[in-house]
Length: 124
Image (cartoon, rainbow, N blue to C red):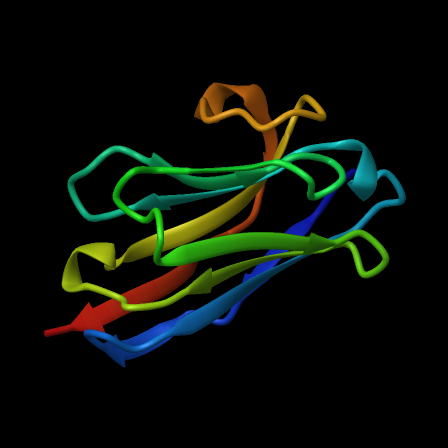
């Protein structure tokens, strides 16, 4: 069984930065791509960023390109999301998830393990 635990969310002002972390249990963390998703009230869950098994390939939603950066440390079984220049529209619950593949994918149904989520609120 894989467990994912997110941390680092909070209340910030527009223009501030936050770094989310996702710690994974299990010995096969490095065998899979990882992703960050978010869900705002009344909206569907959307892909934010993904990273392949080695960290050598990443992908971002257009809305966060140039502001967010995903990374991973396979030795620590942890994936990160550095969020800069935050905007009120970034307000959402952020989830990390493990993909079923080694390559980056953006489709939520292709992720098999999810964390409980961490709230990010950006005030204007």
